[in-house]
Amino acid sequence: MTNKTVQSVRGFVDILPEDVWKWRFIETTAREVFQLYGFEEIRTPVLEKTDLFSRSVGEATDIVGKEMYTFTDRSGDSLSLRPEGTVAVARAYLEHGFAKNRPESSFYYLAPMFRHERPQHGRLRQFHQIGAELFGIPGPEADAEVIALQADLLSRLGLKDFSLVLNSLGCRVCQPQYHQRLVNFLEPLAPQLCPDCRRRIQSNPLRVLDCKEAECQSLLRSQSVPRISESLCLVCQDHFSELQAILKTLELEFILDPFLVRGLDYYTRTAFEIYPGRAGGRSRTDAISAGGRYDELISELGGPSLPAVGFALGIERIILQLPELPPPATKPALALLAVGSSARRLIQKLARELKANGFPARADLKGGSLKAQFHRADRGGAELVIIIGEDEIKDQTVMVRDLKKSEQEKVPAKDIVSYLSNRLK
RNA sequence: GUGGGUGUAGCUCAAUUGGCAGAGCACUGGACUGUGGCUCCGGUGGUUGAGGGUUCGAGCCCCUUCACUCACCCCA
Image 1 (cartoon, rainbow, N blue to C red):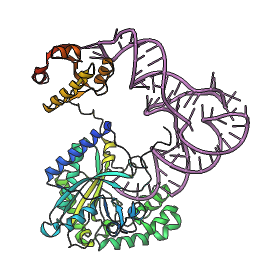
Image 2 (cartoon, rainbow, N blue to C red):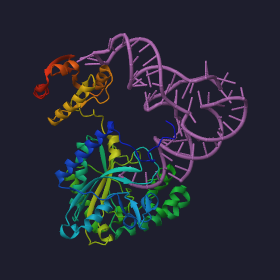
Image 3 (cartoon, rainbow, N blue to C red):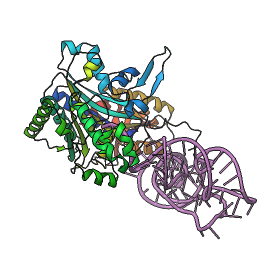
Image 4 (cartoon, rainbow, N blue to C red):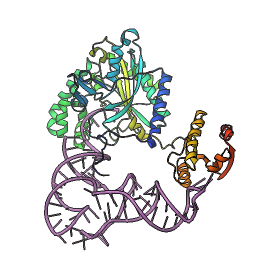
């Protein structure tokens, strides 16, 4: 492996055949669940105008501020590879008149996202999300529906142990008030906090609350930290407590975490994350799914005032949590081997004919000794091998060998299709 | 973006103090000229991630760089 060979771009990885079946499993399971819930698939472009993300996700967020793949195209427009899915779907929802003609719409997507982060376990620069957006329903029923969908999807995928962490971030009325209360609370403590936290007081005060430094934690625990729940307006309080009641009715367990934060600016009210494991300890591992309500996004994009709630789930992170599964059994293959060049023509022709009849027939394309051809057939998982050589050409037959039983018999060439039909059911 | 760890054949890993770069698997050929798996024998495959330095001599020490990985950060 010399460095002269071309390598893939950092953080962009190949998904090899030995792993692709996991992806397909996740994708088809997701599509099944979405169909049950009445969500429709939508596909939006990987490129959007940079402006779309900076005004919605937030100019100051890390995602927009330092992680986007942004470039100027030949006509001078600033474009970005999408760092997340929600905003693009909201754009499409507006652009195609759904907001007007069918405000209650629900969409899902399975798509690659791009963020220029430092690659790490479960964190790539091109990563893949399964996401869903439910538009037009203001009540907590919509939040609960979306959460139930995630839970159903995860358990269908075989992930039995996960915990749902829940919080309300408040709306555009109560959010700024809480923010100010928190900053007022933290500023006097700043000298005793770690350098990171001192910086966070301005940039992201909520992050101070789950700092990993023991000293910060004990300091905060000795004070009565203001909680968002105490600052919520009445409407937000109602929404949040109703949601909790619905989740209980649906028998969906959750853990309240007043310090749960979202990294994108458009979220209001409900915010949730799903972590692997029962404990709900959310400091150790990364969330496998997250989302929330974003009632202001549509209007901030220039549309009417319409509520929405959605989530996104990281496929790579799901795969890391997937229980050990045996790869699905592949259809038994038929290998066709040839001795001699005229036989080689015949097997390729015969293989094509067999494929037309639905048999996964694979003619050996490389040739060489029969032994080598047998070896490849065996390694390739063939159960039956058809051999054609001079003898078979002469008497218009083919030799059919069962690799498992180590038995073989001659079959008239013209009968091969019906012979195989009996043989392989 | 910050800090730590690791890079040796396609894969998994050896190599004494700085002293001839190796094994297993895989691939390939033969034993067995038209019959796979098992066994035995042989072969291909490496600028030791890359570049520079120290040294009679570097896989090993030093510097730089790239990649992977872990923690921070961020987030799905």
